[in-house]
Amino acid sequence: MKILITGGAGYIGGTAVEIMRGQGHEISILDDCSTGHVDTIPKDVRFVQGSLLNPSEIADALTGTDAVIHFAGKSLVGESVDKPALYYSVNVGGTRNLLDEMYKAGVKKIVFSSSAATYGEPLQIPIPESATTSPTNPYGATKLAVDQMITTESRTRGLAAASLRYFNVAGALHCDRGWLSERHNPETHLIPNILCSSVENPVKIFGSDWPTADGTCIRDYVHVIDLIDAHIKALDSLQNELHEIYNLGSGDGYSVRQVVAAACEAFGHSIATIDSPRRPGDPAVLIADIGKARTGLDWAPTRGIQAMVADTLASFN
Ligand code: UFG
Image 1 (spheres, protein in one colour):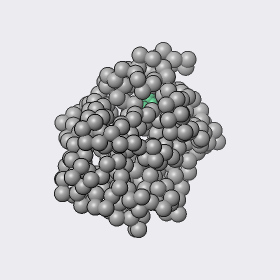
Image 2 (cartoon, protein in one colour):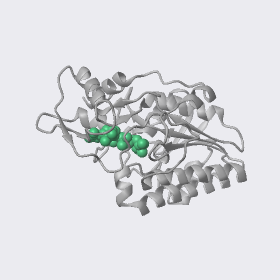
Image 3 (cartoon, protein in one colour):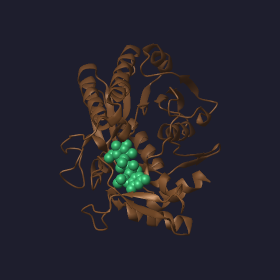
Image 4 (tube, helix red, strand yellow):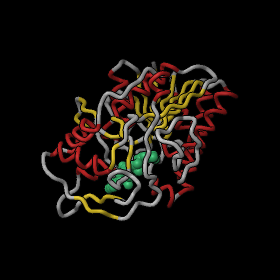
C-alpha cells in the first residue's frame, strides 16, 4: 500500500515509517521538521518538507497515496496552555487542510493519533472509549476537536477512519540506522527525564501526596513498537463511512516511583529523586481500558515497563 505518514520525522511517526517500510509498504513523509529530525528519515522514502498549514504541500505529499497515518501535530500539554492558538492552528486547522486535500485527491483512509488527554480528569478507571470527554488543556481539546471532525468527515464524505487515543508512549526501536528514540527539547516525559538524571540533577517527582498507594501519579505506559502494531491493525480494519476510536495503553498502571524502580533495575544502580510540587494539570491516575482494541483490532501489547525503560536507556547510549 502507498501510505503518507505525516510527522514521519518524529519519534512515533519515525518508528511507524521504519516498521511499515520493512513490511513492504511504499511510504511518503510530510513533516515540517519543527520538532522532527531529518536525519532519521530513510533515504528510500519520499520526503516532503512541508506544513499542514500549506495545502499545496499537503497535496504534493498526497500524490499517489492510498491511506494516511496522521501523526503530525503539536503535542506538549504545558506548551498548549501557553500557546493555545498555535495548537488550534496546527492541530485543528492543519488537520482540516489535510482532510480537504485528501478529499480532493480521493484518499479515503486515515488513522489519526489522538490522545488520552481528550478524556480529562477521569470519572472511572480504567477509562473506556465511551467515557465522558472533558479535556483539561488545549492540547486535549484540539485532539478531541479533530476526533469530532473526523467523525463528521466519515459520515459526510465516506472517510474510513480510526482515532487511536494514546496513553503514555515509551520505549524505542532499534533499526539498521541505530535507535529511533525520543529526542524532545525541552524533554518533559518521565522516562527520558529519569534516564538523564544524575546525583547533581535528580529527577523531580511531581507530587508525592496524590491519593495513590505511594503518593505519586499513576500512568499507563505502552511501548512504541506495540503502538505502531496497533496502527497497522487499525489501517487494515478501516471501513468506509465508519470512524472507530480505540484506546492504546497496556491496561496496567505504574506509579512514578514504580517507573523509577524499573529504571534503577535497568541501570543496575540507584537513581536520585527529589520530591517536588505537583505539576499543574496532572490527573492522579490514568489507565486505559484496552478491551476494544483487543477485540476490535485483535491487538495486545507485548512489551512491559521493563522493556520500555531498557530500550529507552539503550537508545540514549
Ligand atoms: N513526571 C515526574 N517527573 C518528570 C516528568 C514527569 O514526576 O520529570 C510525572 C508526571 O507528573 C506524570 C508522570 O510522571 O505523573 C508522567 O508524565 P509524562 O510527562 O511522562 O506524561 P503525561 O502523563 O503528562 O503525558 C502523556 C503524554 C501526553 C498526553 C497525556 C495523556 O505525553 O501527550 O499522557 O494523559 F496528553
